[in-house]
Amino acid sequence: MRIIAGSARGTILETPGGEGTRPTLERVKENFFNAINFELAEARVLDLFAGSGQLGLEALSRGARGAVFVDINADCVEMIARNAQKAKLYHKCSILKYDCADYLAGLKKRKDFEKFDIVFLDPPYEPGKNQIGECMKKILKNGFVSEGGLVICETGEGGPPDFDFGEIKKSRVYKYGKVHITILTMGSIG
Image (tube, rainbow, N blue to C red; front, side, top):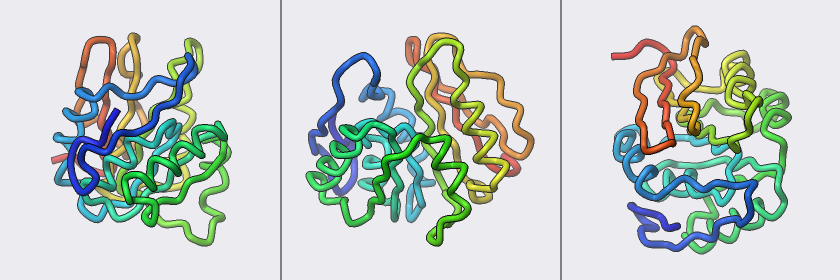
């Protein structure tokens, strides 16, 4: 796994092993990052279920101004820090060990809270669990996404869930084999 474009282009990233993680495939990442490239400049990014941190680091490499990485796994949190240092992007990172739902529940209380322009939501594929829906409810209830901001969700074989979240609308869906990338936009589209 590597950073595809920008200041850290070509940096090889560590990825977690085991069945509990599923890094986004490089060709999938390249295609959807090309689709959002113009939204990245100076964006504030939240990478939930961050794993290796590859999505947030790719965004930073392509011009985002800062990224918050959240993962419950201590090994992943350490790996994100190593990957950020290797890519020379550590100074733009806030790396936190939290359950994503708990992080979102307490986010408004943080002194440094600022709305995000891009949120990556890439939970493990767990049948019967609707982690995207649970996170989306908290994200929207508390106004964590800026007007015109994006939430980018990765889902598996079952396809993208039905999104009925009011002020955030499905703007694009990409399918790569069994992987679905759904891009949601806050506010009016087009």
